[in-house]
Length: 176
Image: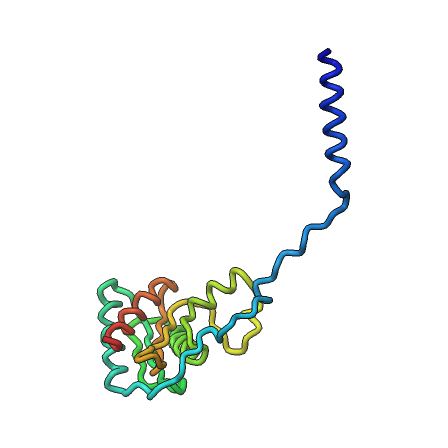
């Protein structure tokens, strides 16, 4: 009887396997770049440009934050038209970071988003690298007040996470 039972179970398994279409293809994985959003992402309008006085408040706060940690930074503030308003290079900050801090600030205001967004995107898609002028390193933050971009702040000189901490301190001081 047990042999009959084994044969019956085996026949059932073979029948079930035969019912599955062989060579059936899985649907292709969806490309996240094919998603069409209902609204424009990062559609923040540009506003009245930040003044030198307010930009300097951000520079001072960023420098103070960097000094608390003994980090040597370059800090740039741009207006809503992507023009340099003010810049500070702390004593001993690396020379290469002068241009990098300015690039981060410029790209943050031009793209209307933090440069960290592009850093994260590089890990998921290489298409971001095809964008002209992109900088995929955190430490560039747009300054949004009243729903409009008034400028941006960019910091460079340390690790990206250090640049971001300093930038956030500067942005917070400007926007309070």
